[in-house]
Length: 357
Image (cartoon, rainbow, N blue to C red; front, side, top):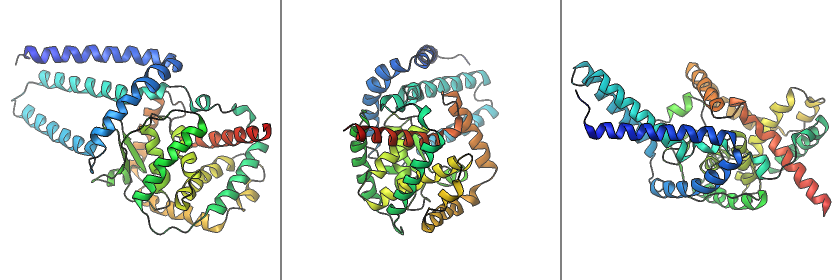
């Protein structure tokens, strides 16, 4: 079967776009400042505004529908191959063409944000050299006090109210950090096949192809605000997981809404305690200051996730680790814990600014 001239032209154009994307990847990897200027602060805000206004108003996940349709098309193609109604070489070329398009789509629609300047530089945070054990202990104790004071029993969830509060929080966070954040239409969506998120231990996911924010439908109410803010941060061009969590922390903890505030305190405190447990002297004594109700929330979250741990979660976790490392996140999945250092540095910056007044 001879490939039509029109298809050959499309394949050639896809190949050229693929090579151009590879060249830009190499260039942006070497120059975060250039990435920031040309893409993250230049092209990307326009891209995400258009994408979210096209797809954001749709109540269901367009990404999930697209994946299902693609799966059906793949099955049809396999049947045609088995019945010899399509030549193997032609099928391979179609697959390569689709792979080229998806690869380019991913990076031009969002993926180049992995190569931008770090949040620590953009927000003017101090160097990590100041984070000795004394400093960490001081800020950990302070965060425990704030979390204890922010505790509220949570039994229900008004998603619309939380969404509105978080959107307002991004305006506050951008002003406090001195950074630009793109707008858009970004309601939290759920998946029809939510079991995929459960089995992969995924709280939420941002779709770079349609700029949709997805939140696991099974989250406890106390988890929801922080996860929603984290995924919205990804839509705003924050690809780094630690930075997305840091922005979500600022959004949540500056909120006057008790649930939103507590969700941010609870989530980051859990990561702070894990971070400090391995090396901080007197950790047990510091940990004992956390109020029992907070530990009960930690246990409730753990009980919800524990039954989902298995082969699927381990395989998906390994794959995501490699994915992050391939996109300049050297720590892989451990990058999630990097929010702890960013919060401590943020607290140090605020303390220094206050003392200078």
